[in-house]
Image (cartoon, rainbow, N blue to C red):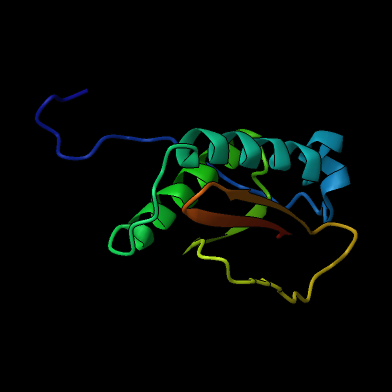
Length: 135
């Protein structure tokens, strides 16, 4: 091969359809398992938020970093065929009541979610991870 050649001869990869339209076709481990994601949520929230104090200036940045960390940890579980939607809510705890709800239109046989709540003396944090299967 000529060292001065600007282009290299790379082998072209050809992808073909699998015609597998549900996660069971890839094995039981491929299905979004709520309890595994719940354990990741609990661990990350405890590590990151245990000694955190509420700061309205840093709140958005902390929520974004927490969502990014959660996304990376959940991806490690191997849900390659799922789109992950992660919502993190952080607020000051000053004696108010709070209710967070969501509605989703999804396939109940393949899609799922996990949610975890954390609070300390100055803040609360609610994390929700939605796993939406795509073909």
